[in-house]
Amino acid sequence: MVIKNKIIVIFLVLLATAYACFAQAAPDPAYIAVGARPLGMGKAFVGLADDLGAAFLNPAGIANPERWQVTSMSGKLIDEFNYLSLSGLYPTLYGNFGLAYIGSSVGGAIPTTIEVGSDPADPIFVADGSELMSYYNNLLILSYGSKVESILKIPGLDRISNNLSLLKGINIGANLKMFSVNLTGDHITQGNASGNELDLGIQGKPLNWLSLGGALQNALPMSMGGKLHYDTGWDESYPALLKLGLSANVLGTENSLKSLGAHSVKLLFDLDRELTQSNMPTLLHLGLEWKPLDLFAIRVGIDQDAIDSTQVANNMTSGVGICYGDFRFDYAYHQFDSAPGVDNHFFSLSYGVAPPKKISDPLVSAPDKLITTNPTVKVEGTAVEPKIIRVRVSSQEAKMNTKGQFTLEVPLNIGKNGILVEGVDNTSKLISADKLRVLRLITYPDVAKDYWANDQISYIGTLGIIKGYPNGSFKPEGNITRAELATLLMRTKMGSDKLVPATNQAIFKDVSLKHWAVKYINLAASEKVVTGYPKNIFKPNDNVTRAEGLAMIARFGGVEKSTAVPNFKDVKPKYWAAPIIAGAEQVGMLTYLQGKPFLPNKKLTRAEAVEMLYRSQPVKLLIKDLTSFETGY
Image (cartoon, rainbow, N blue to C red):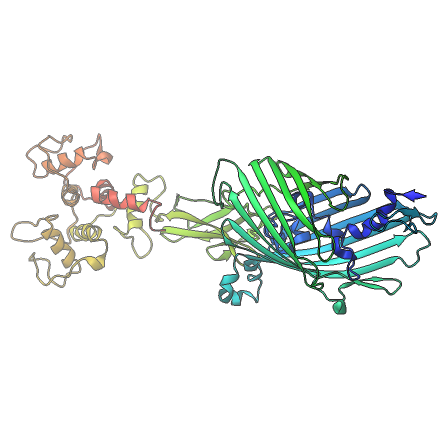
């Protein structure tokens, strides 16, 4: 019985694994089941390796995805050999972990022999036995890939990170491969086999448009367990294969040589060199991926295969990819020179391939730009970025629940408070930070919240212009002396007590050089903010009257005198302070007395002095700076 088609399936067991037929080489199902996307590009993927296909061609690429992915692939080789693969990837803070399974099988094959006397160039296969044969070759892959800088954040290694800065931007990875083979039928016994192997990979970007990669597949020698061991005691090795590749972004919206609208074009080139069989030819893989839209990709490639130690087959490949949200469907057609005219179709469905959505605000915290009189503030917020597992508020650990919500009560100093909120991962690497700005105003126990000048006293007190008493009180209805008013005006003008210049000359007879306020009074006199009484006296300890206090504060604020008649019936036009009172009234310094008599000889209270100062131009500028959230935090 002459058989010319289905009978050759057993021969395909070797064909399906390329040059596994040389030198007792064990068949590797990952030769084909690399995913429809890499297949469509001639398996040129070592340099690119940006999705789960990296598990089969360059495990260093496992480090690239920023979110979990799953993918599957199915297809038939030469219409008979069934392939199915399932793989997944999960990112962690210390690198990405992957798990992949490949199942390859052929069933119902008829055992054959070559008919005696047939042409060796065109042999005739004839059935040899009645029992059908089946072949299974399964592979389980445990993958790990990480960016070097992530590894250097592991406690204990962080101390050497500064010495290895050149390695940042490089990915490394490894595969642990576990094989299981079963051959049954035609009276075969002990057809089971199992084996292990190891792949190593590296990848980096020397230029923003160029990625380079390298992988050493089947790195374990037979002496270290890198082999397929049959129950019969027969061992087969997995040929060590060095793979080098590059990926160039020729067109793209970013990190590319050129830009052309939404077009993206990647050129891929891989080189394979078998290390354990030096007589085998070096194989090339060429690929191109063109995405005219983010939704659609077109792929072509050449996947070279070894026919023997001297001949190479150029297998043409092509494919398409369709993306919709997180899903991607890939199709690949792969021609095999050894089986012309037989269609080979492969399909993949992937989830999680869309780039992660950029979180505009990884750490949301509040309150910001808050003005309060409370001694503490409750800082609360949410760590939106999943990588944030701990939150520090002003270096204190905040309680955070499983939803990323956190809260912490923080004490406030008088004045401006910058509160730093930091979100870190479990290696204490900073992921995101917020700067909260809170202004705390001073309060006094004897100034009620509904007191008419409460806000003014809080702002002036916070600025340190008028200070409270040692027991914490302010005494808003208390009087203020001429020396005290001169002091606070000059303190305000100079910015601090230390900047008020010392004096060695007594300007007024009743203010000696030993007087506690002599330097303030002398400066106020030289600035024409105060004037003395006849006979060159100042009366520093006298309580200042409302007219005197307004005159001093108006001069300090640069208020011009006015010829208008003041709107106070008890202030006559010829009164010495009438022009100053009229000028102050026009610039809004006396709004608190609207509809009331001025009472020029009434003793000025501390609250009134604060109110007048609050309305003066120099203090307005100080309050504007105090309430600005752009500086000082």
